[in-house]
Amino acid sequence: MISPVRKNAAPAPQARRRGSLDQVLIDAAMDLFASYGYRGTSLARIARAAGVTKGALYWHFADKEEFFIAVVSKVLGEWELVFEKSRHATNAVEFRAEFGRMFDTMAALNEKNPWVSRLLLIIALESHKIGPRVLRSMRKANLDGIESFRELVERGQRLRILDADLDPNWAATEIYSSYLGLAMLWYLHGPRFELRRSLRRQAREFMRQWSIAK
Image 1: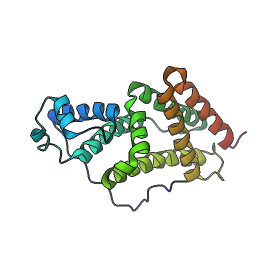
Image 2: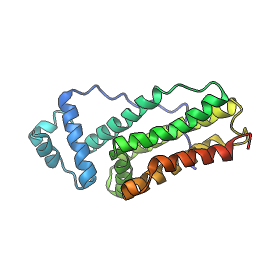
Image 3: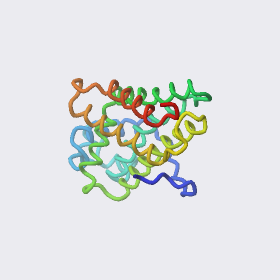
Image 4: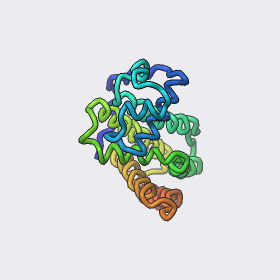
């Protein structure tokens, strides 16, 4: 089980607001990382794809690691905005709907931007090639995701829908790991693997296992 983020952990530094050229460079880097992986993407290749000189890149990004972190922030930032707009349930009916909607949303976001699954594969397969700064950033992102699932489980317990004896940390890890596994299968097999249907089934199974009323 992955331990959740500590409440007293030092806050992460806020990313600066990036201009339009920065976004062009990030988008170019995203496509290249998705196509060639981390090791196969060079600053020269990013510069060519964006239509700028390699020297111009250094006015915006210090190195390839900073590019990759910016790409991760862009992808995960889009996810955070979607989930932040989701209204929290206040009763049993709303909670069950919110729980299922979370899995539907994860499927929709992957289908909209398959790069999310590709990003996860890159980190898993190339972690030995990626510097500690990037790995720290990815580990924090993972823990933040698990923390949001843990908070959802705890709300379900406070609403007396989920079993009070359920370990929220373990339940959050189960949600996260099941999502990752299904997303990977979808990315590898394409339309032959029905991601939305699979995630909905997983949501129902978790609710069946964890609910007070079984």
